[in-house]
Image (cartoon, rainbow, N blue to C red; front, side):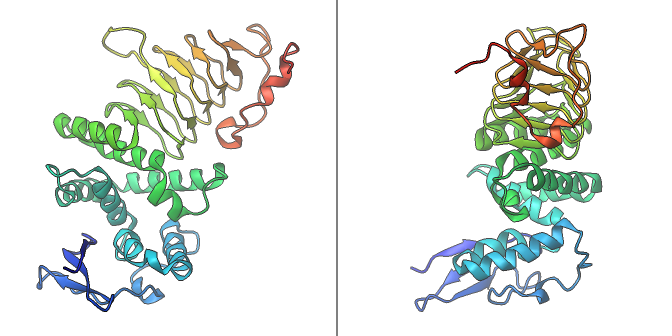
Length: 322
């Protein structure tokens, strides 16, 4: 029996089926709602877009076309994930619904929920664009916007969190917690829907990142894998860290309690931070100490969340030898 593939929900429901001669065609399950032609990726697929070269979504469409020209086997995947959608919000709702769906929680149900939230919250799409830019500019492993959009679980987890946070703020807490749970299962990233996260955020690799309910993460922050922004016990209320703009937090770091990591600060990998870190300084160690000392800490002249410099502080350790 010929295989069928469920494709885009951007304008309706269709199945992509393969004939015996290996050609793909669409079976329209809702004739009044959708009409699909065989897959081809040309500029005619995006006639309604303002083709501003500075727009991330338009760049993604161009990248998708180029990718498929190089690897035609990706045609149906790219079509259902990107090029069949009329907007970034639709494509984002689609990819998240596919990634987070289960047999008991179908992707169609999630898509309708996600697209309704995204369409009423244009600031989320702007934040998603800034997150895509952050990955492209700061992560040398990111080869394109499409690569990040389809494959970077830190990016996807962050976008799903934004939706969950919106639902949490609307007192739709059961749905918000459900999304948190599915993100944790699918991406190994656990962000409480009550946490507040800015834009231009990079969760690099992202595995085992945990962010608590009352945590706040500013703009242009970079967080590596294995980072915990947690509490110190079972107390209630405001109990989680506040991360300033432009901060870099290295892999395996624990920042615990209602403390502040100042704007433009850096926390070295493997640190345990229990006290405030002043702006534009570097903290490292367990328990963390300031490079240069508390009285006269060395000041950073670059924004570490953007520069991603994780090791230069080691030159300050006179006893560091191999």
